[in-house]
Length: 218
Length: 364
Image 1 (cartoon, rainbow over the protein chains, first blue to last red):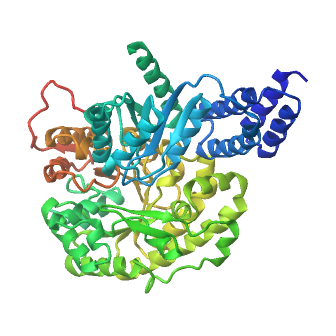
Image 2: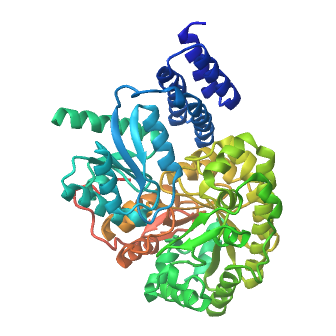
Image 3: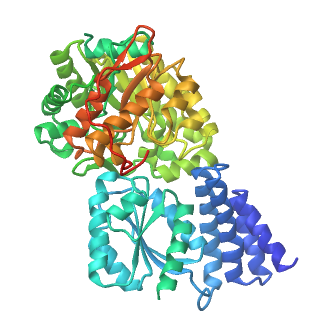
């Protein structure tokens, strides 16, 4: 089998939401000497991005994305030990968290999945994150983007504080804010650099757009 | 002039209300009328009832909502619920592994957790209002309840990988809901709301709704109908994909959220059910001006009120910081919309100045 066939096999297994087949196809590719980075990006992540697109087109729903993500996560554990050195060029560095007062993490977890599938390096700092911690984490990883997730509108004040704090701190990170209570107008009103969208696939698109803005300005 | 209850009943029965009924969904917001936060009073029936009574006098809306949140049941089932300033959240799910389900028992509404607090609040509200307004508790729907005892991500995965187990869990959650609903009915509730945010089209598919939500909600609605009370099917988010299913489960009122178009909903299901909603509780009720809200409500009334079977309201419950004048603007929009004998709407006055040419800050 050539490399492409192994990678297609992995991608197809993920899209089929077949955890066993995903693991088997991943192991088979590793055993055959396919590049681990290719397995991760062009097999596993590529499959997850397909499922993400199906979700955006309302052909599939969150349950399906989560099952695919679980398969990818387990298969990635097989691949990771084989990856030495870097994984190649990162699409950007992101610090991601759900704002203080909000304990919802499905949305944030899906965003982390999609951003990583899209080649971003993501530091997930969890839920209920106070504004200062976003700044701290952004400094620690020299982040391009601080991505703030929220489901509960009562927490908008804290998000506004976080954006303000990030601006005043002098770090270079841009703020991307997303979730159901947010919109382009709300993002602008609270001082975020960009609206990240309602869902994780739009978050990936927004992150890419924000990165290209950052690179153009640099 | 009709009283609040008569007005709502006319809407539900598709007969002639005097004017458009209105339920802004002021729940935690009502606590603020007496300066309370959710955390300070959610265990105190007396204070909650007093605040809801004061809010009813201030807003003059057509229902009084008992309770504050949808975590009462899952807390009784054993999940750890912490109360932040305005809203409780689950910080630990009682089910960690599938076999933990075997340890759960249906709670006793007379003694467990906050169930007796809410049923007592219902009693106090009935004592005060009698049958002049609709006294209605908010409760948790079975699928959402399941997500609060197992975790939403885990449940969404199990719906694909372990469906038989999920059905067992949903059965337990429904039994819990039935016990609680019976206690609320015995306490005097006129209507009961099943809150099912996890079942929105944003999260699950129409097939998943058919398998994992419909049959279980129907059992709750059947109980209410058997006792002559009105069950309300409330799903936040985009429910257009499941609207026909929602309307076929026996709940005479569907509460709809802002993503759906009320005119479309009226066309789809307006003959069989009463639709309630659907102004955006954040972009409009929290952030917009009273004038913008008044005219946005007019739009909704124009789309969906004719023919009866309509209740004006917000799409979901109001943020506690929602300005009083914003709520009053919504109520006034309903008061200014009178039903003629042929069930068409006459706008008897414009209580707010027309919008100037600048479009609203947050378009619908």
